[in-house]
Length: 312
Ligand SMILES: Cc1cc2nc3c(=O)[nH]c(=O)nc-3n(C[C@H](O)[C@H](O)[C@H](O)COP(=O)(O)OP(=O)(O)OC[C@H]3O[C@@H](n4cnc5c(N)ncnc54)[C@H](O)[C@@H]3O)c2cc1C
Image 1 (cartoon, rainbow, N blue to C red):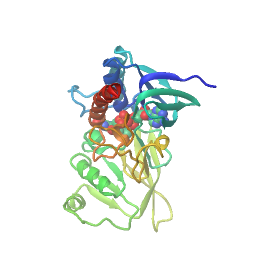
Image 2 (cartoon, rainbow, N blue to C red):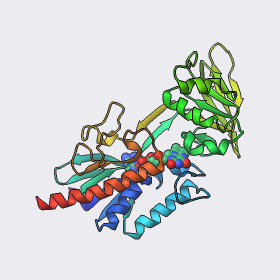
Image 3 (cartoon, rainbow, N blue to C red):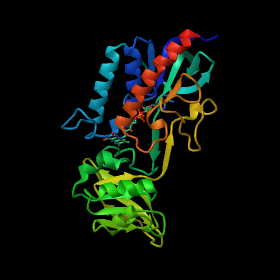
Image 4 (cartoon, rainbow, N blue to C red):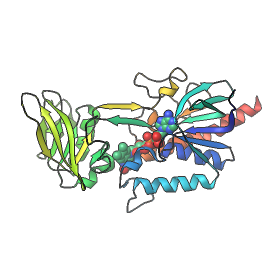
């Protein structure tokens, strides 16, 4: 039989949300383990410049920001181990977290596993953070006066593109739909903007680049026999698969139809003592600041959970 390692709290995921929850819990004197599947930092380490996280007037690279998060959490004895969490089980007062078949136990578990979104075309991983972006509000200002392509036509994509029109020129809107209709004020303004060129009936084939980063986007356009290369410095991808990393929570807590964890204001899921924070829960904006906010909320609410449990 396998031994079980017991902690007060286990945080799953070492992005901004998880590192913040870990900091709050460890600083409160709780024996806390953070489990990370890959490298610490999550999505933000893929960008070279974070300009909208307070405290860094000149901006900071995602990697440098996360190094500071880590140093602060470790100072309060947050224990960090690497491994992919395969399952979480609700055993009542205790929760079990399984990594490579090994069970860890804790009274509080915080899921901070973020999300992944990919167009799924060649060049995407290679140029991630070097011209490939998934966040106009994060990276748009880096493309002042430069050509970019926005892939996608959902409301979210339109909002992101609308944010970009103050910077990028030209701005190609790549949509698989036969046309983009001005069905809202935002769309009207976007589609009428002189920088915007709609490329309808198109799908991305490959992101092109060199040592400097992205140099173009290869697309297939309906009705055209050969692919077309657009010369762009940035590709903002708002299409393809975007999926919260919650497979290990399925059947344990309430998830919505797209797999986002359903939580209340305190970030607690349908299972007491089990929290879901950051990009893994549905909200309008997914940012470092919002993830950090969730980490603080869950870290503090977990202390309430420990107290109430102690009284039982
Ligand atoms: C290219 C890019 C640029 C961005 N720029 C900005 C910006 O400038 N400003 C801003 O505010 N926001 C920006 N964002 C958004 C921001 O990065 C996210 O909102 C934020 O990282 C969310 O933090 P999180 O901790 O919730 O999740 P994530 O950052 O996604 O971290 C989740 C972590 O959990 C780990 N994990 C997943 N599954 C498991 C598992 N089963 N077991 C163990 N570990 C697991 C992952 O490896 C990952 O490290 C950007 C995002 C991208 C992609």
